[in-house]
Picture (cartoon, rainbow over the protein chains, first blue to last red):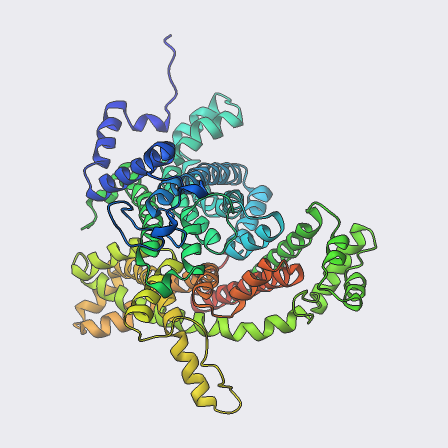
Length: 302
Length: 324
């Protein structure tokens, strides 16, 4: 008898169809824009030293005589109060933003998926305990906690990653649990159980893949949120004091009176970068959602 | 209201507060170095305050005793003495709470009212220009850092247009006791931009939630029945749809508190608005550990308490909720 492959939910997306769907991501203007901006950020982060016209980490590379000047040919996005090039700082700032965004985009869905899957699969006391933790974590305010931790440990963008993971899994956990609870009764799960597949196999091989689309969307949204949180923490002066980041640029602009001198370029561009990166992640989330859930596509998305 | 539901929520709130308290305690003691030494070493602290701190926290006793002492102190409301001001932290914080409430409460309530109206409108004319704008701006608003928007508003309204003050809370020299009306007026004038920032950023969230709720309700049978009676659009929306559509907003309100508090911290920093947020930032910068800890603890406890109340309100207005 030929070896029959047990049905897996993953096979609902055939390889060829999947390829076509990924192309659909590029059909929406928002999708193209967000992918392009993310690509630009990745290029900037990797090649920051080669691309940026000045080195924001080198005190000697500042144009003190040209301090607080608006956009010009020499400094396309103007200079800060020490004559540092805003464009160069922006380019180097992509590193912190992307590290934070991608790290939390990976850790939060993984932690949430594991806990949510365990809660739904085992039910009973385990389920109640995990959902209790979810309810507790959901009401803890993130920023005051981050400030508290930063006060003791010292500023670092890893605080954002760790605390975002610690606080962010709850929402994912709730969604994954709901999905797996509804999937648990599906015939293919029963089939897997009927030939005595061990529970980790049923859980991680059969049930968890049905939540992958959900997790991809969450990853994008989490990344958007953590980019904003990192910017906020750096703005308050609790970021990494040695790393150039967008939030820190805005903090410097605020503390060194960019608003008093009307240095709009020093305020506008870093904030715009944060907004666009976060928006790109959110749009990516929407696009992925549509990709995986064709029912949304017919809805009136003007 | 179901008693079991109440008990469950209450246990959850207590446990969340417990987590915050333990976390707070652990943070002091997991740090490298002896906490007693750190307290002693701070030159700003006079000797009698040091003795008070050692007595209060039992810093010369074993860790376990210290933990129990800490719990006892928290329940008694003795959260320590601020290094920088030499006053009980609770007193310092109590002075700041009204200022934060002033710039968060009004914008949030206004945003809910405005969100209900905008959401209703967008849902009624689904696919129209208002709907499109709401969804585009709604996505954008969730990506805009609150402090950046605040800075831009300062740039436009205070630097260029010179309509509003750059920062501060009240005109120097005014006091509430002498000229209450002028004082309140001056505070409102200074609070305009911070409030505008928080208002602008919270409207789209409520409006979007309202829109989605209204759209799903408009498909219900009882709406069809009401329409077939021939009632006016106004009665339909404001009497039949509204009641069920605002329910999700209540839970959204309780969950958004967490975000409002974070937003307030950032906005207070931009405007030098001396509320809880700025107090915490300044305390953290001055390494005034008891004050930072107490602000964090009180913020967390207030958030949890507000969530608890919001949950109860929701269970009260929506009898369908049994076990959340």
